[in-house]
Length: 203
Length: 221
Image (cartoon, rainbow over all chains, first blue to last red; front, side):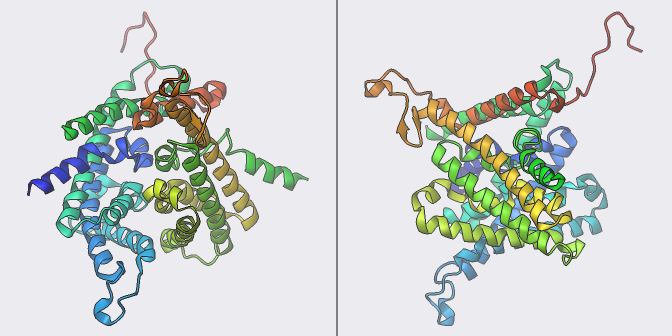
């Protein structure tokens, strides 16, 4: 139990997806202009990552890993090179399904998400979650915790960044630094802050 | 001649004027993660440029046969197949670098730069301009990657491509390495500074302020 809790904290704060691993930066920077949009993105990230990482773990273990077809008399079959296509297919299907369910049962939430939901298909952080799961050989419970934790870390980071940016809209910045430039500097400062979590974990 | 100028313009525009990273905000993730050394930055640049050019050519070839509703899936499958090939090639011949790049080669699949260019340009243009545009964007991406990679490796380790340039203090030289340069925050700071520098020279790229301060002496409402 405590191992899973450690993994959760590790995934959400110590190796935070956008700030220490640089994953999902495009949406992180592009959608952090407004706090409402950032909140919607964060919730969608938690949902999608919490579903896709365990699902991909099951698919990888059951169909793609070396030796997974041993029961069928094909112990030497190694399909792991297909994992990239399988993962991206699962992610695209999950996002599509989530969109349809929300549209049917929770139209208000669906309207709030707007165009961000389909964009999640090409979010590097989500695919990276599944790839890390393979690289670090997580089991099923571990991958559930890892997916939820990474999603939460992303949500916290993007909401914080959008809060700072909405304050900075009133600041008098040099012309060239306004917008994208200052956002990178902000992300750097936040990344310094999150680096201190790594020290806490080491102790 | 006019055609040649058009192609040349398509090729050179993404280098600085419409750079994918500093202006279009595309392909950031991998740009920052792999720039701790020149070798990984160069490998990543080459891999991305190859995938981007081939994907743009292929998608442009079949652009009239892709139904609009499923075009995203088709594009992603094409890109993912190319990435798998590149990944296998790297693992076969450059195993060390492939280990250092970790999952980031696989992540070329979801690199917004690839999908952005195929969706935004290759889908509406014949193969030749599409591939030229993709190649130009790949070069623009590589340029930023190599600049940041060079700065981080030079000041973080005193090396370029693993060759010592600045002799380190603990090896009898004079240079004390800035270990911050190898950590995550410095990549953000360097890229922010780079954006600032480019936009100071090309003032047309600066973003308009969201709020203009009211002039002094006037009553607000």
